[in-house]
Length: 254
Ligand SMILES: C[S@@+](CC[C@H](N)C(=O)[O-])C[C@H]1O[C@@H](n2cnc3c(N)ncnc32)[C@H](O)[C@@H]1O
Image (cartoon, rainbow, N blue to C red; front, side, top):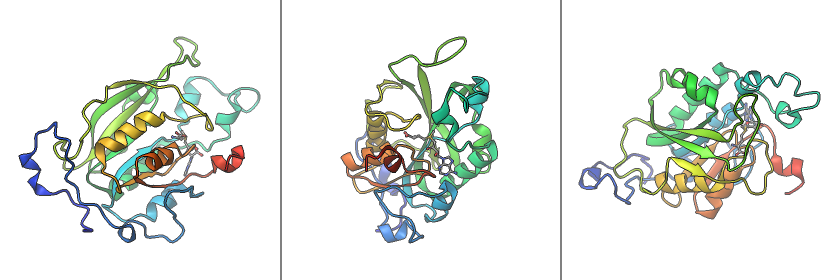
């Protein structure tokens, strides 16, 4: 029951099969630390959080780093004064810290598990391969999120963000990815915004359904609005996540 491994009899399935052949772990084989609770906010550093998770135990991780890069590119140097105040209050991550997160995510994912990594257009162009160095992770797909509204920008104005689909070895879709109607350009407006970087609930829900069965584990070490948690609640997956801040307390909504 608790092997967390991918069954070998996937060869009888078609690559477009809706059947998922993964054996999931029990909760006591996933969380090491008593400080971490499931299906609720954990206010802690994401690396400490990941350290409290067993290796090879988690089916899916969403990671949406707090990049410094985009603010530098967009010259938001004055954000603390009058613009981008909300964004500037969030802790920024260096490239080294992002790499450390990805190393740890690679460790905790089950074989053939997925990392959904949010990137902006600058990281997309410059590439994220260096973050995957010395891991068992490979890029397998890309989704463009059309936010359905025009944002900021001195040349073109931003309307999209990107989700890099990354899989832990062994790379396979058969018996692992079970939902075959997700387009690689996804339009969704954010509803009920409680975080400046909130990501689309319905897209995240569709992706979770594609690569987990009910009862499997989904993590988000920098959960922000915790809408990956909301997605998990709606489709009966187990969420475990952390952030340095608790948006529910800050917004007085919980
Ligand atoms: C880009 S936002 C995530 C938004 C989230 N995906 C959503 O849909 O709401 C990044 C988050 O990372 C958090 N953060 C920054 N450094 C962190 C760290 N070391 N550990 C945990 N969270 C961190 C910030 O507080 C921020 O909420």
